Amino acid sequence: MTISSVSTHHSSLADDIHRSLNTCFSTGKTRPLTWRKQQLEQLKSLLAENENAIYAALTEDLGKCQTESWLGEFGFLHNDIEHTLANLKRWTAPRKVSTPLVAQPGKSFQQAEPLGTVLIIGAWNYPLQLLLAPYVAALAAGNCAVLKPSELAENTSSLIARLIPQYMDTEAVQVVEGGKEQTSELLALNWDHIFYTGGEQVGKIVMRAAAEYLTPITLELGGKSPCIVDSTTDLATTANRIVWGKWMNAGQTCIAPDYILVEKSFKDSLVSALKKALVQQYGDDPLHNEDYGKIINQRHFERLQGYLNNVNVLHGGGSDAQQRKIEPAIVEVSDHTHALLHEEIFGPILPVVTVDNVDDAIVYINQRAKPLALYLFTQRSEVEAQVLQQTSAGSVCINDTLMFMSNPELPFGGVGNSGMGHYHGKAGFDTFSHLKSIMKRSFKFDVPVRYAPFKKWKLAILKKLA
Image (cartoon, rainbow, N blue to C red; front, side):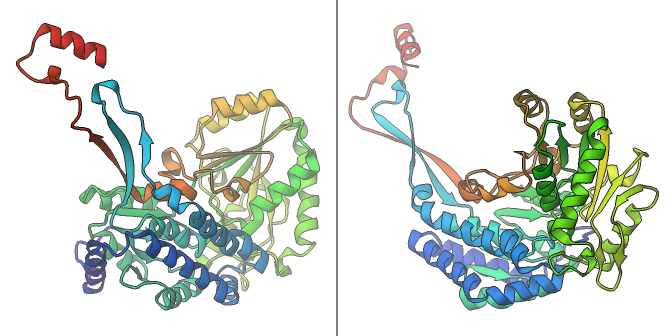
């Protein structure tokens, strides 16, 4: 998605949709728990009854095989809905907190209430999951929503636009398709929350638009997620897990390992293991392997091909322009000003950077923007503790890749340039809720020491009660 600026003109369609959703919210229709659960069940039915159509759209857009589509999109959403349904009553219940002595007798609690009408802007690399997972949270919290799918994944976008009105309450949710113009028109409106998944450049535009109305936002961005490989690791398992995490969706995953940091003496062993794992998982001819995905469009295909100039390609790198496929590539970059070491790759190229030791790896990471994810492979507890204590990242996964996403109890989100705000499970529900603080006092035992006229003895009592 490319947006140069936010339009100051509200399209009649965007404005009408926004107004109608606000009207629906004002009626209180979305607040009852029974309505929210019924709509979540409808969303689950949408997935179940259109599974094959979803797989077909994802294959058309990104060349995803059925297993990858299930793991990263369909299955993820199904489990997310089930987890939400199982816990929604508890999440919506009043959250009791203690009450200080000075406010006794009384009770204090927080009550989650929906924010209102929200805008959710999805991304093209996981075009179903990254649009509907935030919507699951927004729906569970009792909001109305506009869903803006990525225009780059056009088949998935049109499928979502067709299916949502068939299954969901269209008084409370609308899909707006389109590109830069439609997104800019939506951003010019006054939302109660904006949830954006995508790149840093557009994230800044979203943030500027939100500032116009002091709208709270969640930005799920990306960046360069490092992968430290310690020489004590289980080499074969490490290689398999890196290959799986890096080359799923042809590397077009915001939390994929972006580059490897490895000790010089261990580099050759690791590269050999990665090559072996790549052949085991994708065969000798990955360009014709149906399990291996394609690049989203020609522009990104050419961008990724350009990255392979002036680097030492250790494995792969061949391409098929007609299919928009690039072989899994392992590269060594001697020029530390090369774009591969500074820009988010978002593709099937894995740079290997050598360091003298773990200390140097930590320095390398800390000299750069904070990543969305950080991976560490080691069997030394002291190395694990050192990396956890001395680095910052949105999420950390030790001895695997991507798997933290499978746990809905772990909030997902970035830090610094990699994003702000969290979702998944209860964290998503809270993101789309206002936790209203409430204190209820009793009329019994009123102690008037806080009332004027003030006396020194009253102040002494108040200090003891505080």
